Amino acid sequence: MPPRYGLTGLTRDRVTGSFAPGGDAMRNAFSFVAVGLSIGGLLIAAPVVATAAPISAATCNAIDAPKAMNDLPASDDCVIPTQGARASAAVHPNTTPVSPTTTISSTARSFDRTNGDLLAITKVSGAATGEIAFGGNFTAVVTPDGVSHSAKNFAIVSESTGAVLYAGNANSYVRAITSVNGVTYAGGDFPSFGGASRSHAAALSSSFAVTAWNPTPGNTVRALAAAGSTIYLGGDFSSVRAVSSSTGSTIWSKSTSTGHVHSLLATSGRLYAGGLFQMYNGTTQHGLVEINPSNGNLVTTFNAHLRPDTHVGQYGTYDGEEIISLSVGPNSGEILAGSGGHAPAGDSSNEAILLNATTGARVWTTSLIGDCQGIGLVGSTVVAGYHRNNSNTTTPFPYFATQLELSNGHLTTWDPKITGNQGNADGGNNGVQAIYVDQTTSTLFLAGAFTSPSSHKSLIAFSF
Figure 1 (cartoon, one colour):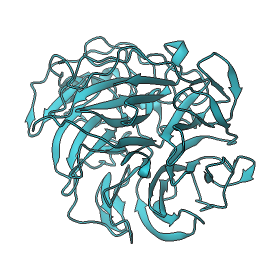
Figure 2 (cartoon, helix red, strand yellow; figure 1 turned 30 degrees about the horizontal axis):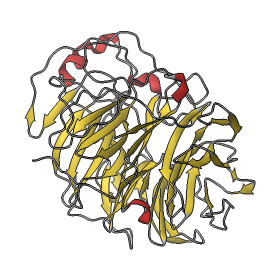
Figure 3 (cartoon, one colour; figure 1 turned 30 degrees about the vertical axis):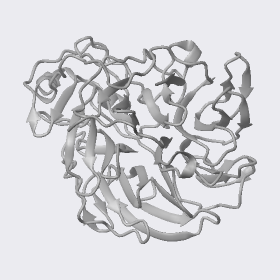
């Protein structure tokens, strides 16, 4: 299919991030978490598969963290010596990188960083001037002038200058953020937010006051999405919930089972949920579903036919294709999805995927070197962020993020040059854990658990 040009009004909010059509008009939030096998690279322009070639891996840099963004052991992403056959059978090398049709600067712009790591980033909807909200696990935000500002796990800064506009105080991890009509919504592990008692979810007004919104989910929130007067929540509470954007009262709630929700996307009147679940509201459909946003019912005409978990052996609860990130596509007829998982021999789990938004059919699939923890549309290309727990030099992929051609998923030559594993308590699966793309200002934000370059620890921005 041909490249697309002239795309406007596409932004990404994140859970742990999000993407939304229409710039500040609306935001679609989602979170993502999973585990993957960090080896090699594969390009599948369905249904053709490239010829297999062996992949060799060296040192594994996995860091286990009990409260990491990925709720599965990071060390499970490492190649085990006895699994060398799987490494060569499951992964096919991508062809030589090409020059991208949309140019992203090779030099990062001056922007904020933190002293920890980030799990969520988005733009505040309806703000008079551009405001970027981000959350994760940190105690300070360092502005471009090098000054450290105390802020606990959440902050809102000026998109143009990086000045801290709101220094948050969430007493545990913030994993999901979305925004609509000037209000910013956050979810995560916290029992209090901004000095107010708020269990796992809270909202800030445009003047940065904690609002009365209080849906009180019973466990960790990993995904948020906003559409009109409704906020959608997913996470470790075995359901997808729709609640009022003003009060937090439940509009509908539908069950998920055998795995949690990690990503949500509301776009073009549709709602999608991704994660490690096997069933939605009593119907078996692994990893990704389309939901009627008004009543929560499953849309049965959409099915991506993802490979389900085998539930056999050590990795059986996450060896399928687990959709841990979602984004709007180039038009209302397509969406982008990021997958993670610990694939069995001969299969792939760590993928960037372009899907038909109505049927779920794949347009293309590109296998990455780690869980696709963030994905976003940049002009006529796609940027995918991932972790990389095997230090090898046999694959052409940049260390923590890559740019792919939208027309066919082909790897390009762009390299953000970010590396380094976090040493703090939320090191987890490292790498890029959240992406926000602002088409209005032509800025790409990558957030996560990287440490280098030190002047951009955990947060780096590029113009395109």
